[in-house]
Image (cartoon, rainbow, N blue to C red):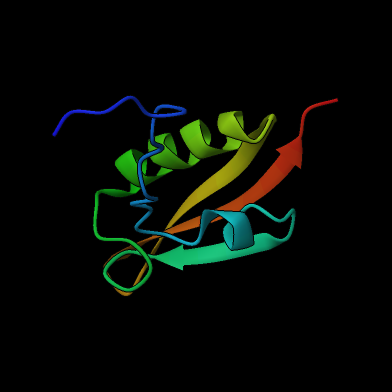
Length: 79
């Protein structure tokens, strides 16, 4: 039977990655195939979006090690 709710329900988190951990301000090395599956540039775009949600920016560096794409990143809180 239909009923009125107190508020609109929130969606459960569907985060594939531990963003709160990775965006803690430390320098992180992420390896494609282990830490992320997407192309490195797609992963960085997603990381930038997550940083923006947390009122910050991301500093990144792309590397290739043993044929794998590696992303080094660091979150910086906006001033």
